[in-house]
Length: 320
Picture 1 (cartoon, rainbow, N blue to C red):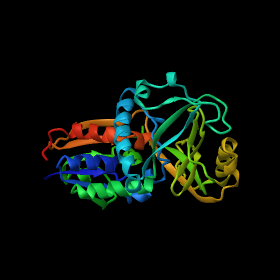
Picture 2 (picture 1 turned 30 degrees about the vertical axis):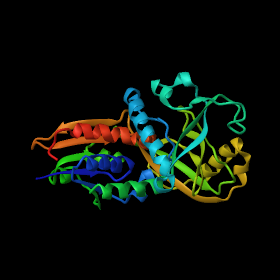
Picture 3 (picture 1 turned 90 degrees about the vertical axis):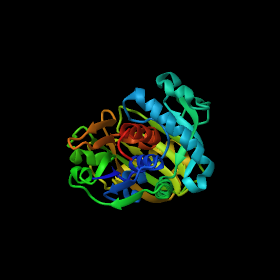
Picture 4 (picture 1 turned 180 degrees about the horizontal axis):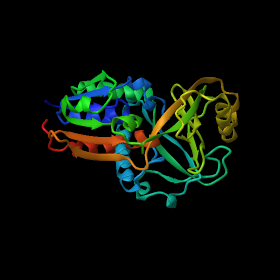
């Protein structure tokens, strides 16, 4: 057995974890069923915010660590795809959030008119908004520069990786249902619509945890991204035209100019949800190390760097 690391999963969690390990000097290979551009991460909205993810105590730390890194990456937005953009989290108040909120620079109550036609309470913030296709490409290049590699390889069982490496990090997302027989990880389907941007420069989100329908628009370089849905245990990757129409309608109630915007693309992604993120370590019978890092739901981008650093700590003293 070689003293190397295999990271299973090539989405934002897997790539970020692989980078942290490779930059610590380890020999890292990423095994992924499909290239990063076809993972769920590629269709994510890309806004930093701890959304639909537990456990809350750790999520705050993971999110803030990631926030600091994204703030640095935003200085090279053309290269990384990370920008700091202002917008409104509607229906949210500071006293509803965890302790982490006090460490988000500039987070405050929104003023009248800052959220278009939305007249309710909300928070104004300047947060990382990430162009995911660009960012995933940049992550791949950073991994290669650190000496890591990416291999397209579909696993039937996790033991295939365990047989080849002294350390395996399981970042397989929804794939963990089969790879480690974990029925607790399940899909939460998200449908989005990309339209030509009619001149909107700020983002808006209104997410009701009790509802399957969410309302948000995110100005990306390729267009205005409209959402969305949160359909639990729905495996369909086919866009529903009626749902798309409702998404546009909800967003246009906030910014009327969206109603006439030309539709460019429809997207569907399956968030790998779990009651709580699984981030732990096993010592295998043969002495190898298996670290799990999956179940991030709709906040994989938000916690990616914090979870990657924690996963690297769990790898710990395994041979490098």
